[in-house]
Length: 314
Image (cartoon, rainbow, N blue to C red; front, top):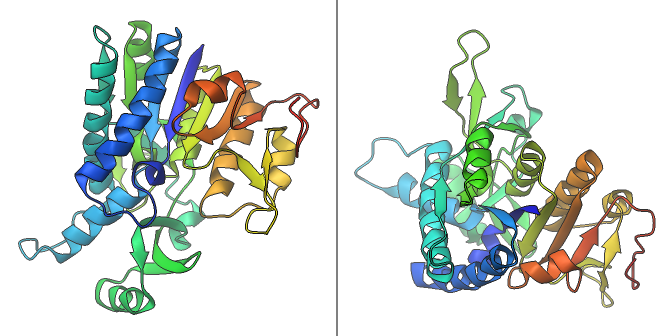
């Protein structure tokens, strides 16, 4: 099978953890073991990853660096996170898959310059902020912030992805047996000049799950696996009786009341991929990608109406 596996940025740097390199490397090692199991089972694997915590960290450093006359734009910072996270993943995968080619590819994602998301920042990036920090950063740096659970975080525009520009290159690499790490952070967001065709970076962060679903479609992938820091999609999330959802159709998944800043984009991406391709999608734990594919853990999303929510597996 051809599989696109999307790692959550928060799965590599979890809420409340110090954003040190060693902390992220620990989670990368866990992810690499899980991904290597897919490759060893004979599957073609493309790895994408989030970058919310990491790009937020780089943005703060750039905004406050006295050596700069202006901070680096988000599209450039997004490219930096592709290299940073990509090299950590590549080294761990190479160690676990001796003799196997692994490539990190900086990729660009085309978006619509007229996307309404540019006027309504909603994508969370960076570390949690206190109310006092949020007020100061809004006043001093012009940031937009929003409530994310019990804390505030920075929010930036997140336009819909239209195409991953390097998808043909990814396909060629897969054909040669290469494990490809690409589309990190949803890809570097670019808009295309309608007259010249030239692309230009924009101040945004594309949702990595939506980009992963689009890339999986462009590559004719058989499965999309969204790997995160929870074992399943849960119904009744935030209540005293959350229940793991074992299987679902896209329609049922879309009807669930899921948190906008975390599980909702994952559910939408999984539903979209299954609807558009008829393939398999799964949402589940970072440390057991093969189990999600086999249906022994995680939430499996299929077109079949036989998928039964809340308790039984179809």
